[in-house]
Image: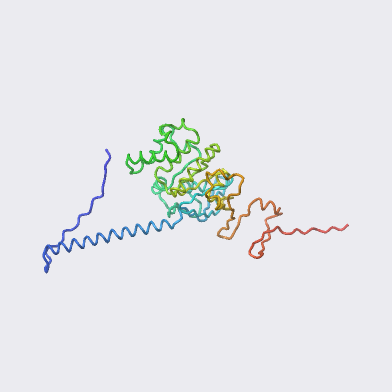
Amino acid sequence: MALNLKKSKESKAEPDLTVTGASAAENAQSSQEGSGAEGKSSQETAAGTKSTQEASEENTPMVLAENLVKIYKTSDLEVLALQGLDLKVERGELTAIIGNSGSGKSTFLNMLGCLDEPSAGKLYVDGRNLFKLNQKEKDLYKRSTVGFVWQNNGRNLLPYMTAFENIVTPMLLTDVSEKERVQTADELLDLVGMSHRRNSRLSQLSGGEQQRIAIAIALANRPKLLLADEPTGSVDRKTADYIFDVFRHLNSDYGQTIIIVTHDVELSKKVNRVVAIRDGKISSERILKEKYTNAFGTGKVNWMEEDTQEEYSIIDRAGRLQIPRHMLDELALKDNKILVSMENDKIMLSAPETKKEETED
């Protein structure tokens, strides 16, 4: 039997009825008015504090990474996965993270999910420093603040449960009523277009269907931050587009903050903001051009062929800049030296001139 525990109200002291110079009725009335005023003042103070906290949260980035370093050590080898990564993601953003294998993007995503810790640096999510949380606070964070969609569907769904049961399971760890759990699960199934698969198990679902159910599971406890690791990596183009449409719908219509790690070039070209990680640091960002922001679903854009985003290089705190690899290749540098000059309002980079040795006949 479930117990419905309610916080008991503290008993109030009876008014003093023996004070001279006033009747008992007057003193009782005065005490009640004072008590009422104090209660009202306390309520107003509490409301004001809550309002201030909410306003403060809204002004705080959802994600703030500062100089993150991660070193993986073996008996005779050290691997630098992150080398001073800095990143800020605002609330309500849809951001994609791209990079070659070993660039550090998955390491960063695991840190956001509280599945890994850095060797140095700070990481704040929803205003909290993740690396100062104790184990109990980490468990609560994973349960209520962050939702995770894995590439491997075996990590997303329990195979012996139906789609509906999988979505309900995370809510069993909360105080949500059974009626609300059922209602939320059905709403999420409808949101990802899988109501007709409500009673299907993992083996009865295609790869794309499994991934859509995985998104619903990740949203079950209404997380503030949704993380997706290669969500379209194992599906065909049509299914990948549908999955991205679900993410875009969640972001644009519900304000859901989403970070996606992906190798999918076409998907990344549709995202408002794309962050590229190279050698453990942010190397560049691409921002969707304004004329493409309302072009989704129109069929008028060739997302693979058109240049839909403006690319920006990133200067780190020390003033260092990662130059795109193809530009370095064109300079054909002989070593690691490069000439830097200022022309009008532009910084010019050029290869040093090589002196040709004169030979005598």
